[in-house]
Picture 1 (spheres, one colour):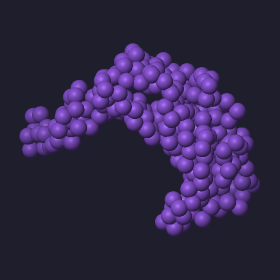
Picture 2 (cartoon, rainbow, N blue to C red):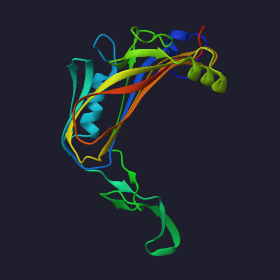
Picture 3 (cartoon, rainbow, N blue to C red):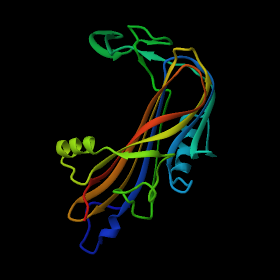
Picture 4 (cartoon, rainbow, N blue to C red):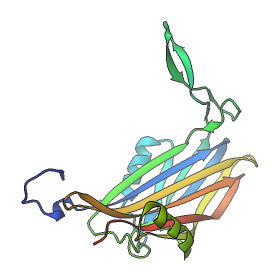
Length: 248
């Protein structure tokens, strides 16, 4: 295990870490049933380094869900299914007296199965996080086609205006920003006004130690809201940011 401190015999390769990370959040504001979802995961040539860790996390954290990595017409994806999702809504934090000690206060929340002005915040139904270290250096400046990125990915267009604003604001001279389209499969029964939000983020990074920790990375996200019952593929929008960090 690498450490920040050691003698001068350590080489840069002792500290070389290449990794991918993935996060998925699913939130429903209504009861939905007979749920099946296929969602993008980082992959290259239909292989995903995070796949086994993602299955472990799903099995341990959400045993009521059926999770698998499957091949679809749009490539390798995460499949998740469950009979029913029932939302829970929370209020703003409320101060209440501690039982037996009314001079002290503790924070609590009102919880409800339906939306109201008193309980407007839906709880995340799914929050999955997975990662993996890899042997090969990740191409964080040009990851599409060379590294594991969210798939499928098409209609990739560089957004120079948004990238320029980001470079100026955060002083990231190597950064580039791309917009793209992807696909999500959803099938479930739901009220016509039901909203299911799916939020996916992924990144790849290289870290090394040369007179201090240094790194470079790319990151991307897909955020979409599905309304009403679903029965098939939906095109969704994504954003990819490359070239963040230090480069030789």
